Image (tube, rainbow over all chains, first blue to last red; front, side, top):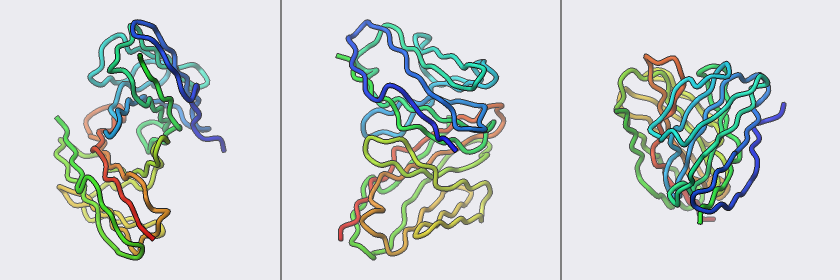
Length: 111
Length: 112
């Protein structure tokens, strides 16, 4: 059974640029959630996707957007990057609203 | 607004010295409380889900318990490899999606 995978592992971007992060769900899972984790903090919920539609959103601006594909993989897009967007971005997959299993994360640095 | 507070922020133990981590929560309609372990620079690793007050779950040296206001993660005779950040999260009811609200974590260091 393949776990949750994310790419890339690390990314360095300049303020104002756009970034796309990718996530592949664990086998048998149909729901993907994205979280942002700042250094020394717990993860914060960005949004969740189910049946290729956004199914709930946290307190993040519209420049954070996402997609879910028919194979349940997902993308997180962030436009107009700001310095405060520097964080570990975590993807988690689940079957509906049951236990969420996390990927290794993408470390984004905005300079 | 759902709130989760973990204490202590950091805990240093000697190998074999048992202790407990606390997770207190204020939510409307708890659907489940989750414990995760996170190693530096990695994603959280799922440990336990608790659904109702009085429930207990065990895995190796870890035991999680739940009351109506808090959860405890008991660590019995810890080893250095138990060193990690332990995260608590709540999933609230009345919604059609599974948002997790996390605490800030407890950093556990076990010295040999």
